[in-house]
Amino acid sequence: MELLQLKYFTEAAKNENLSATAKKFMVPPSAVSQSIKRLEKEMGCDLFIRQANRIHLSPKGGIFYEKVSKGLQLLNDAKEELTDEGTHGTVKLSIFINRRLVMQTVEKFSRQYPEINIVTKYTAAPTEDDFDLIITDKMPHEEAYSAVKLLEESILLAVHRENPLAKATVITAQALSQVPFICTNQSSSLSDITENICTRLGFSPHVAIRSDDPYYIRKCVELGLGATFVPTLSWQGQFSENVVLKKVTDDTRTTYAYRNRQKYFSRPAALFLKMLEEEFSAPLLF
Image (cartoon, rainbow, N blue to C red):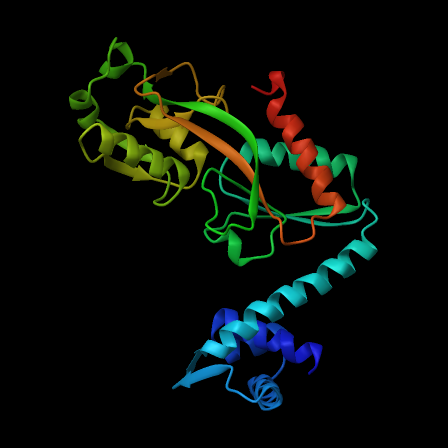
């Protein structure tokens, strides 16, 4: 049993595709296939069930995958810990929300620790990659993750000052249901918040414009094209005087930094998390 065999096996188990595994390791698919067959011969059982051009783990393969994955993670953690000097390395971030505040921290951190690389991704499947920290308001399903609370903020409605809702003392569900919404893309944090609030109020929101660019969303509101629900603190100061923020419900959004407890948490990652907590709690930040 060779280490490379086990790496081929675990990668093939994750993506259920030998060609994709071969592409990652930059070898011919036949090399991966033959390596796994030798492993199966040594183990005395089929680790995969093969159907046409697809493969998936057999019952015994699933047991083997669970144990091997943990073993490879331990080996990788041991290597990282032995070489972790704290002043060099890479910190991988998955940023779902509060991009502006997180990137301000990245900029400050990079000035203070120029030898540490920061890799950022805006991803819809953070647990499928090897991230050090996941910045989100949605808890990963995996129990292996622990959370650090960074920020809790109220959700307000942003509307143009000439909109009738801007002058209303109380905003009713009926009045809100007539307003076009400017919203982030579906399955994003603010999109889900908008859907949840409106559903509880008894209607489905009419989303006129969707965008993944916060700047574009703010400009659309400032032009009077519709309203949007926004987190109070992280969007504070981002609108012009033409926009009014109104409280509609008691909804809040909480930003967390998640990390995988089963993965070695490097010193650079710990340094970044500490700075992230300080930046989010700084009174003058908002």
